[in-house]
Image: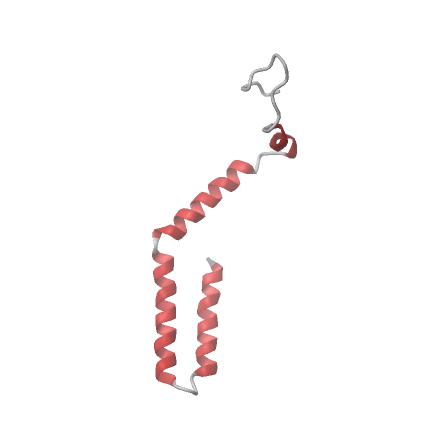
Length: 85
């Protein structure tokens, strides 16, 4: 989300640099750009993906290298798949 705030700073800097050419069009362009960023941030998709990303990070943070590789190995003879060994 901080990356999108950098877009606002970028568009304002672009406005300051290019306002000499046509201030009216630049003001309109910056207004639409900031409005577009606001609409994008207000949609549900951004927050859904952020929540999903946090859930994935919490789910995988406890795994060690041993556990990650043991998922792909068959269980030892005599042990069930639900066995912690």
